[in-house]
Structures are given as C-alpha cells and as structure tokens.
Length: 170
Image 1 (cartoon, helix red, strand yellow):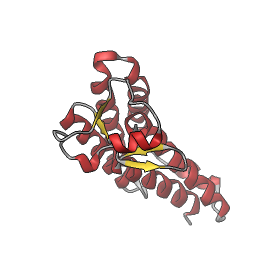
Image 2: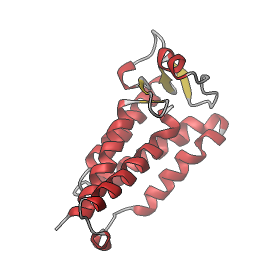
Image 3: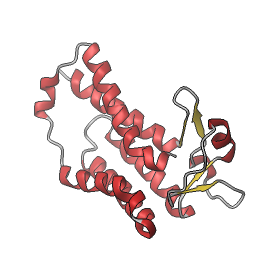
Image 4: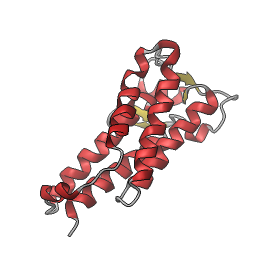
C-alpha cells in the first residue's frame, strides 16, 4: 500500500519533523532562507503520484515518473539534510515497482491488516516470482494498520530529518 502512500509518508515525515523541530526550539523563520531547486518539478512529481490511480493503464508509468521526479529534485537539493534519504527512498520504490510491474504487497501482512487487496492497478500480491521482495510492502504497522516498504520508511526518515534540521539550523 506504500505505492499510494509514499508521498503521504514523505509528507508525514516532514510534518513530524516540523512539529518536533518547533517543540525543540526551532524557528519557522529559518525556512525563509530555503532555496529549493527545481521546486516546479517537485509539484509535477507530486501530481503524477496523486493522479496515478486514476489513469488506468498509465497508472504505473505515472507513479514511477512521479517517484523519479521526486528523486531528481531531492538529488538537486542534496545539500539539504535528509534530501539524499528522500532520493533513496523514492528510487527504492520506483525500482521495485519497475522491476515487478507494480508494487508487491505481502499477503500475510495484508491478511493481518484485515484489508482487502488493493484493486488500484498499482499493487500486486507478493509471490515466489517477485523480484526484490525485501523492497515490497512488507512492513505492517499495527498502530495505524497500514503496510509500508523500506522505501517508504527511508522517505519518511528523510522528510523528518529535513524538516527538523531546517527549523533547528543556526
């Protein structure tokens, strides 16, 4: 389910980083100095990810393109804390999706979550033919009853670190 949630994982990481950064004495005014390179490309990537489930046969291509664009923006801004993790997480997800023709999801984790298999054209059940299964949606987080990939976790950590460090910079 990470495929649909990778962008929210990044957003969740950023929001958590802002909250913790402010609680730790960070200052919003530090963001005024932020010079985010290629930010319009980031918007295109985000839109590509959001509309992907609505595009039928183009859903996979749109989602992969969105992940790659997010990675490119993160790499262009690699001097920012966490940007390299955001790029890595996006590329991990794009890679496993590309090599398998969709994001594999662990049937055991799916059963444990009580959720039905996503019928979004973007996910597939992880099986013996799945390549790079350790990068699939295999991490069930019971507290929020959702299933994530390693790429999602890396994205969230990168977003958290970026927001936290930007607020706490001197």
